[in-house]
Length: 358
Image (cartoon, rainbow, N blue to C red; front, side):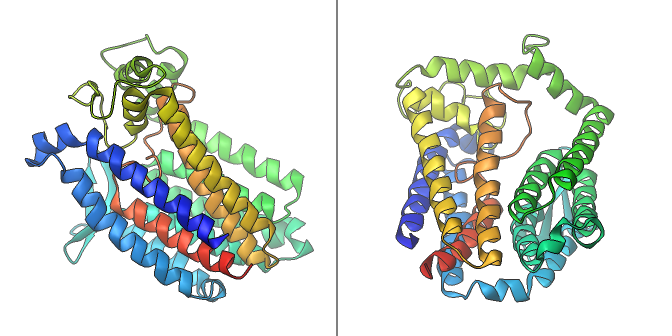
């Protein structure tokens, strides 16, 4: 099972680097004078340190993380707070989502996803039948997620907030929560997310364009329409690797949350299905590891990782394909982002240690 996990992880990494080498070639040359700027940065500051973390954490007894789970979460929350501190936080496009420390910039919310998975797996893993008790289990869980949600909403980063809530609910459900409490928590979070959407005009615009992509093709629905054009032009086998036209300044966020559209445009429906197949294979591998893990902490941690990676992937793909409102969240393993790659690989390294013991 450990070899199977390593195999699909390396395949996804390789696929992501290949796609990024094409998707970022025009924007990299235009903005930084290097066609392979995004590829080089992803490889040097994401993949290499990420693989080092993967192999390092695969050698560390996964139960060690249960002992320091609160410290891990606390440290990531401090980093989240730093984004609002002058001289540390970096603002971009009206959002405060990055931190600069010792000459390195990174996105704390990606680290938060992993630390939250570890903490919730440890916390719920130590609960027995009392997990069905509101005051003992559900209420503290709700408080923790609400505080995390507040920090994300202040950045603002509602897309990441949606992923965090999804992962938290996945772990909560797998831990054996009361169905009444589970659906009550879902209802509360849906109301909160709806409120966050309606208080910001640009978020409301995304909902409008989801229901009617033709509402303003040169304005609020421009990104979605360009994504759909790219996907539609790909056909069955695509226009050929490197032959995208949308990456020539037409499609926004071409190396970030819109990169799936480039996959389909260049590699077609076949390429898209291949990528979906990789995520499904990874999900099946993680679920198999979870099923065969007798330790509750280990099982919940693997379920959390599966929910995070596969859930975020399908949210991104659905949004780019017009099947869900645009969220701005990246496609795991494929979109540009060193912090995201490192966090994913670090988490999968912990899972590898769990699989090693089966």
